[in-house]
Image 1 (cartoon, rainbow, N blue to C red):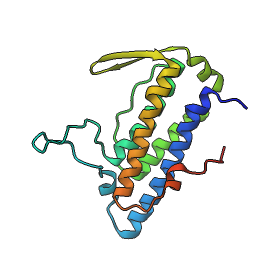
Image 2 (cartoon, rainbow, N blue to C red):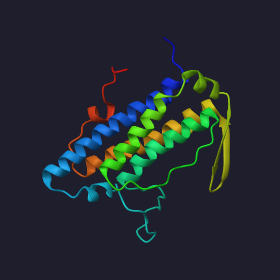
Image 3 (cartoon, rainbow, N blue to C red):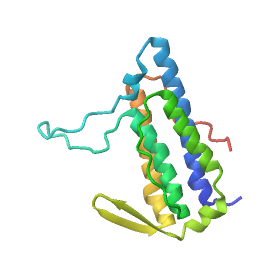
Image 4 (cartoon, rainbow, N blue to C red):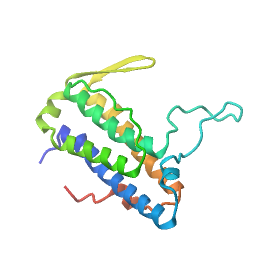
Length: 183
């Protein structure tokens, strides 16, 4: 069987978000067992934004756990829409609970399962234009997926994992990778 655009986009997103759901379930269970307030875990960060005085650089993306989970799912959803040539508006609503995060992940996974592989393959040659604060950038769907969408996704998924580990959640690399033999 040959590799297609679905395998390296929606398929990767489904697997990563599924693994992230399992990590969140472990975090939620451990918080409940220890009596920890779940809100403190959802608000946890790897670090604080630099204030300039300490010499630490300002990082616009030093988000909370909840925000990293949100943008892992939302960024993946927007990436698929861009490759398909569909207009999508970012959902910027904030999750307030583990339940909200699970619902968001479930929704994204369900959406990706409905995407036709042939439609994503056709989108690899489509021009994708990304508007941002400093202007815009464009490239074809293939370049967009490989150079922006996938690294962006893994930035958020990996950072969420790092925050959970930093907060004492008992996770291993196996929790991050999941079952790689599952379809």
